[in-house]
Length: 525
Image (cartoon, rainbow, N blue to C red; front, top):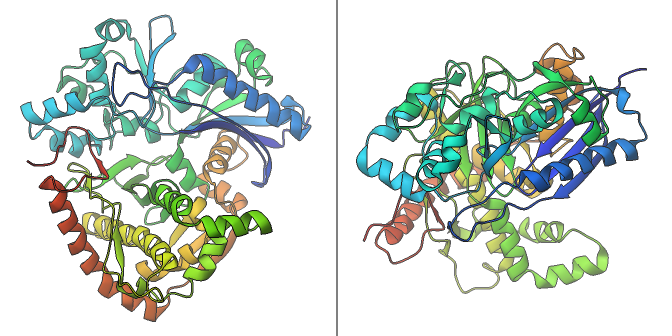
């Protein structure tokens, strides 16, 4: 039987899905189930991972996508996995899951505060090794387990990530890969493996780290139990996958040094590829291992651009929602058509939501719109809407500058993917703000395609990730910067930075509330 298909299993923050592709990267089918990460009322900020419920949901997706595609499980050449990063699972000596938290878990505020108070320079020292800060890493969460659930901590024999958990459930083999493992803050970036000295520096055990396998290598084959659970064929190769952002880069062909991608969703991520594991001397930006061996990524995050758009849509666009309900048009398309009529710079108005990343002192100001008039012809809901689009692009401009300052390099173009790239106006604004060509792929949700490409690499269908991307990634368009609009944004950007600094100062004085503030940091009194 010809093995013409590749299966990607994607464990996201809000759902799990199974996506089936052919060898040319064409999506054949998808099945998805939402899942929840439940908070424990005893522990504010907790988001527990429910493996007992979530594995059957994953199995349901796998069975559904194969059934609806009308293919035999034996026709699948290989399977790979991807997931939200930072989420962790702990296992006991018998290989049973005993504790897990999702990437949005923020219960370890006390542990971060204690580390900052008792070892003020530790975060920067560990960042130089791992590329991670306390804000997102596993280190303070493990300290939380040690302090708050010592019985779980003593039983722990292994730590893993969610993409590795999927492979473990399919094959019985547990190992961690660098692209997601490096987000724990317990890795040596350059060596692309665990660094026990990092754990020792905060009094954590060093005997809980499983082996490390590079992305694209064969992890194992589906065993009898995995086949019984999912309906897949025993012996199907399972290939080591990676973190969602890194595999998203594979899925848009950003696999070589000096290439860059922007993924626009609830959060916006700027990913820039380098050929070294060097970190930023000023500790402002995250550095991870790429899913491509021998490549690393600078990563800068913008908080909530997609959520801000949803808030504005639901709070202020009832008129457009009614029209969309009648005509079947997308409400964002209606808003975009009106916002296109507003000149670059939104007639002088700006807003502050997410700030440019500062990894070891990460704060965001209170959301603010400023510098608008009471003239409805100049400043109306479409102006406010455009200002939100421009704000996300301005934050990204800051991230491009930040990475250029840290590395001495910047890309000649960027790839724009994710839900935000469906907006032609947002694509053009991004090109105008950055002053760079912006390429938009046909497949906007590229993470699953990246996982399928990696599966194909492990199965020998593609030589490497670059070959797979060249065969599978297709392009919709390229937006080129408009010189006049770029000039407007060049003048606007430094003013926006000063306004944002002033808004942060108000939060620090306790006069306004931070939109978000990293665990362990508190406004100054």
